[in-house]
Every structure is written in C-alpha cells, then in structure tokens.
Length: 396
Image (cartoon, rainbow, N blue to C red; front, side, top):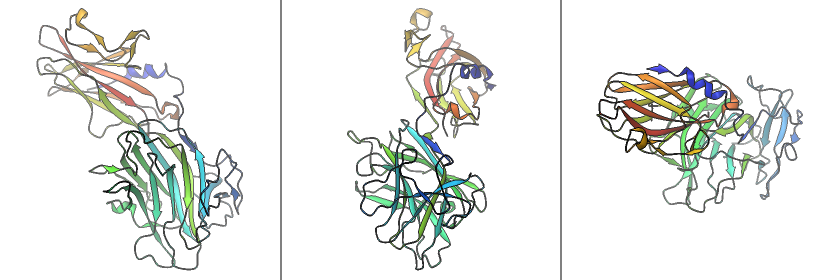
C-alpha cells in the first residue's frame, strides 16, 4: 500500500474548478424579523403557479415564524409560511447543474403556527420543471396519525412509481428519517445521478442527537422522470411550503447544490500472467472533500504495480490523442488511457495493491477531475500489463 503524496502536485496545476450549482447561507439577502420577499434577491422569483405566495428572508433574531437560532447558521434564513387553501409559498431560482452526480444538502426546520390538525405536505426542495425534466423532490411530511399540535415530521422523497409517469411520496425504510423533532434544525442531503436516473444516497443529521445517518438504497430508487431520450435536464430549483391548512412553516439555511463525488471506470486493459489487471475504487470509497480516495489494482502476479495519474483521458502532454497504442513501445495490444503526469509505485499483497489520495478540504476542488490507469509488473516477456482506466470527480 502506498499513500500517493506526489499526486498532490497535480493540485498545483489546477485553479478553481469550474463552478456549477449554487450555495448560499442567505447572509447577503435583505431580511427582517417579519420577512422580506425572496423575489428579486439573488435571482429568486415567484413561479407562475396559481395561488403562489412568495417565501421570505427572515432574521433569526425575533423572527415571526417561531424558528429557533441555527447553531450552524448566520443571521438570516429562508422561510415559507403556508396561507391555507392554495396559498403555498414558492421561491424559485435558475441553476446550472453539474452533469452526472449532483449533491444537494441544506439545514431544515419545520414548525406549525396553525390552530387545527395540520395537513400535508409541510414543504419541499425540488428541481424544476417537474412536468418533464429529470428532477428530484425531497418532501417534509407529517406522519400518519398526526395530532394537534404536531411534534414530529418525516423526511420523505418523491420516487417514480411502477407505472410511469406516476410518482409516489416514499417513506425511506430507515427510522432515522422519521420522527424528526419540530422546531429543531436538522441537516438533510441527497445525492442523485442525473444519468442513471437514481437516488444514490440520503443522509440526515438529527438536530437533537447530532447523529448523522446515511441510507443507500439496496435496489435502485428511481427519480420521478427517467433520463430517457428527450427528457431535459432541470433549469431551476424551488423551495416550497404547502399544506391546505394555514400555518405550516418550512425553513431552509446553508443550501448547497454541487458536484456529487463519483469514481467510474472506462476503457480496457491488456492481459498479463494473472489476466487483465483490474482497477476499481475500494468498496465504499469516493473522492469526497476531506476524505481519502482508495483505488485497488488487482491481478498483480508479484504484488507490484504502477499507478499512472493525470488530468486528461483525451490528450497526453496536451497534444497526443488518447488512447495511445503502446505496441511500438514493446507492449502490443496495450493502450495508454490517461495523461501520465505522475506515476506511483504500489506494493501490495495477495495480488492486490491500493493507491490512496488524500483530498484536501478545499471547496475550490469541487468538480476537479483526475484520471488514472494501473500497470502490473508482470512475469511475462512484456514485463508490464495495463489495466482499464478510472475517472475521479471530487464532490460531496
């Protein structure tokens, strides 16, 4: 096993990654205790949906929504108050999304100011348009048998039904996402795959216990709209507060929409004494900020390998097209798949070695991509056998 310090020199070659998504703590917004409309601030607007009222920017100090101070917040938060009937709060904003996996997370607090048994749904975060685009919809809802005054809510999700385009508000099969305390700030997150059309994982940090739970569906939990040919990507996100009985409060702070960490493989290797060396992320390992990405290289006959890493899988040295045949270098049937900027020697055991890359906790690296390919020190006449390629994208 080897910790790949040389790869850190690649970071010096990269400036701030191309920014996509959105992040705000609402600190630059104009806010007040009674609320200042979100529309007209930082690109937010009121969507043209019948009955819509605007959400507001509130100060924590003296706010009229009964929302407690968020220990992880600043001075302001977004809050929606349902007016009853169809008077639902909607605040919408355009967003440019990363391709592939997208991570959404925010602090959330639900409260109730009504005088009767409340009605669902409390509030939601969604991508828009939800009529035909590939979107996600996280829904805060009351559990069955809710009473007045409500004390808990559930963190649910809208998923595709068995007969599309039908959708179903789904209760996740993990108790950590149910029975969340009202009038307490929690942290809610989801990773979605816009290409596969799935929810990758969910997490909730309970504001009472401060315990974070991650749930990964064991079978694909589909997004409401499949990424079929012609299904467009969403253009906006929406903050929503609903419930036909007046009084539901849905509050949001520290909203981030950004790159989801992912590691994928591509291309093909060439065989050695134990077959083709295989490159794959270690189980459960992803290139997340502040974490260590571990990549396994297997089928090593003498437990020694190389890890070739660069910033491209289309050009070597900025000019040579990839993949590049290595036949003229003495490795017939093998291709170079990545730009060879850094090469690490790996020492393993049981025919497998692991390459580790510690990713700094620096938000400018979100979206940063690197590519690698393994090579096995081989007992055959060629001396080396090459693996498939891997592509890592840093995210949350």
